[in-house]
Amino acid sequence: MQKDTQVADQPKLKRVLGLWDLIFYGIILIQPIAAIGLFGIASKESEGHMVTTLLIAMCAMILTAISYGRMASLYPSAGSAYTYVGKGLNHHMGFLAGWSMFLDYLVIPIINTVYASLTLERLVPSIPFVVWVILFVVVITIFNLRGMKTTANSNKILLFIMCVVIGIFIVQAIRYILDNEGIGGLISIKPIYNPETFDIGNIMVATSFAVLTYIGFDGVTTLAEDVKNPKRNMLLAPVIVCLFTGLFSGLQIYLAQQVWPDYNTFPNIETAFYDVAAKVGGMFLFNAIAAILFVACLGSGLAGQVGAARLLFGMGRDNVIPKKIFGHLNPKTNTPTYNIIIMGILTVIGSLTLNYKSAAELLNFGAFLAFMGVNLACLRQFYFFKTAGHSRNLFYDMILPMLGFLICLAIWLSLPTPAKIMGGVWLLIGLVYLVIQTKGFKKKPEVIDFSEV
Image (tube, rainbow, N blue to C red):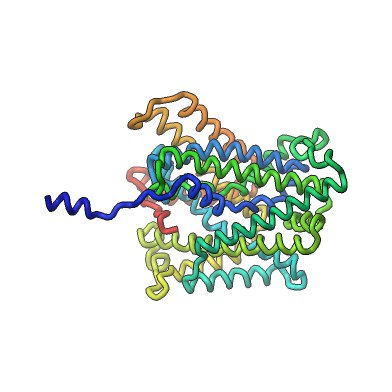
């Protein structure tokens, strides 16, 4: 009787989150303005077909989201792809998936620093880019050293402001197009297919960059233990998030391409959307777009830096990397101070070495390796393994994850050579480390604890 009472008294996670809670969380993670920072580069790379790149990427992400959702219902964990590949394929491939994810955590602060500094340079051109980089990194490093983090409420407020500003842009862009080109300019197939410039090779290269729009959707799966009806909701939520992101981003970019169809005439290709905003809404909309993008970069930069620092701490604490440095935790602020400073230094170096495009492509290198791994893990788990309460289905269990894998592979292969070289070097380092650590794959690798992030 006493034993039964003790079992009953043990704390249990309450499943309180519904489907719309997950969807809202996923939209916050991705942000509804994710595509506009990519507009200039992706439009030029695809020769005016960025909407097409977003739709191709959406297909890959929806298929992958299905695999993520199905694996999350079986293995709820903060490790996400790392856990799914480790469980569905094997522990060594899981480690390499985690190593690829680790690269993404290192690159995210760089991407946000570069774009925030480009934005500040557009607003105050008298101050050079390198100064903005150093100032931005110093600010986010100081905030993180003091243990300050963005809250869920501030993210909701930011999301609301983003939606308002983008709503204003959509209305103003429609008005501009109707005034200048009439209804024919508003309803056109050219942003999706222009036979004069359509080239599938260029479009796939641009897609390998534009998929950055969707990065972060998999964060929804980390809430699997808190969700009502996880088997249903963990499948639907990431799919709906990707679908919403693709359609809403596609609308923004469709209008932008119609407002400014000549992708060779942007004053600044990396911040081209600002000029489109100014064209339809004047300097007010220019400054509003710049402001929300900067604040988004600041929030993401803060979270990205501390996330990477805590991941390093988890690896240091577990002796995956040297514990004396990386396993240090400040007792007053409960922050891994050494790691935050290390990340600050790496972010400055990376931001002055990589441009926005190359940093994004390097991030996508790691992300798509993980995506391919999850699709294969889902295929093996549900088609080749016997899963309790599941009857094997050829279309659902084999064809869908295989299609997800193949489309992700095509996008990954379309990454430019420099991204493949840098990513390949990182992967090789991880492989060498894995071989040494496991004594030639004879034992399980050390666990990378993504619950620290």
